[in-house]
Image 1 (spheres, rainbow, N blue to C red):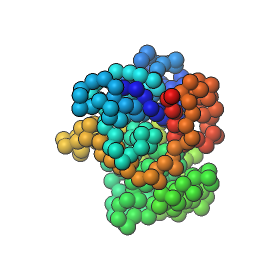
Image 2: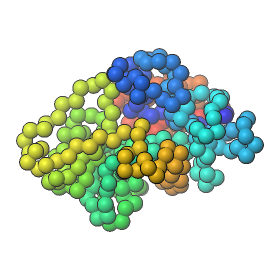
Image 3: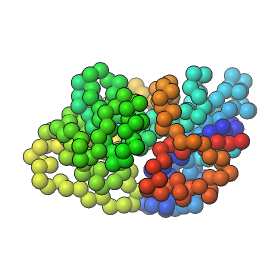
Image 4: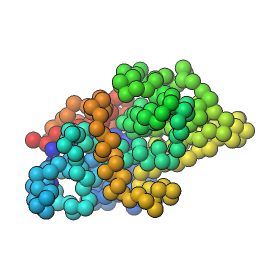
Length: 292
């Protein structure tokens, strides 16, 4: 496969870059086609789209998505890739990995028609998750973020937008994807009585303190973990990773999702650009990498 585009998953890859993957998670956090062992340096990444240049005759010339690190040319098995439909641009197809995470988050969250839903954290995963929730009939979905520049993207995706101080409370469901302590506190505060808060952030080796005193127990709130590496038990009898991957890819057939893609940078410039991309306040969403 010859790579056309890859994408940086800023949350996870910045933790890998910083050597912040806890030793106890080294096995579970291996990328499917990772080379080397934690801690950093390691060849890591899982969002690549390219053209098949050798392999089964029916695959030659097709564009496919692979969970492979950033690399110009590589070998993968035919059953480990997802074909990119003709109507989806190769550049947008890099979002398939993030869409898998968002889809799994919805399975764990179980939003229902008419729900008032708050998604705290306007990164790529938060935006995709909120966008999927908004497709459910009669839902009211608010993206909550401290960065006011996220408002226009949210509106373009059919979402309401609020900063933490102005967000509506008493929600039926809250999804947290900001990867910061303050965001999780906001998520707890926005949940209605007996509501669920689904935690989609991963913090690496950073300790996270949250206030489980006060009204947490009297409101009977539920804190639920979601992680893309496993298919939830109530789906695994009918779903495998291939079916989920194909579904995530088909969900990308919406040109509005191009708003999540940053202007592409050249692969050979990536080493010099990484520190600035991974800065916490960079404001970068999905950093697209282009291969000449």
